[in-house]
Length: 147
Image (tube, rainbow, N blue to C red; front, top):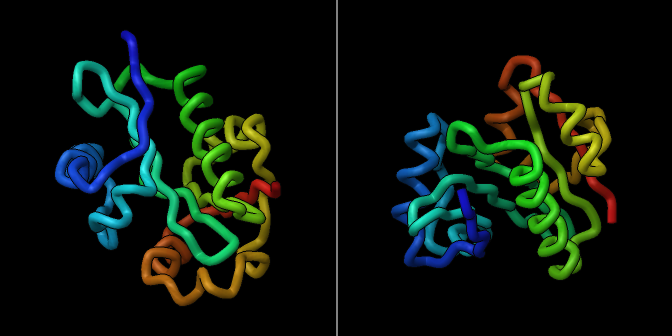
């Protein structure tokens, strides 16, 4: 399967939301502006993977990682690598993520993330409804990638 990776556009909004809903992920807060903060992997115009980033000043929070069945490994790593490259170009100091899937932690560590305690999150995160929702997810852990 040949995938092409591209930044989302406002025109991609409905497709991104549909893909995330199909994956069972929340879409609150994803609007036309947020659509431009997504990377999507496509095959013949069909989204096969997505990864978004919420911006909080000098910091970013990854969200909405969704993969079609059979994707992973090198393709997933490429998606993360490209998102971190874009975050660095935007001048972010650090990128964070949250997961409640313990099996995914070694992958994130290979990508350069390290586990942190919630009190180490930037103060601006605590003013986000999305982050507050994550904080209530059982077994969620936060990880940080420092530039």
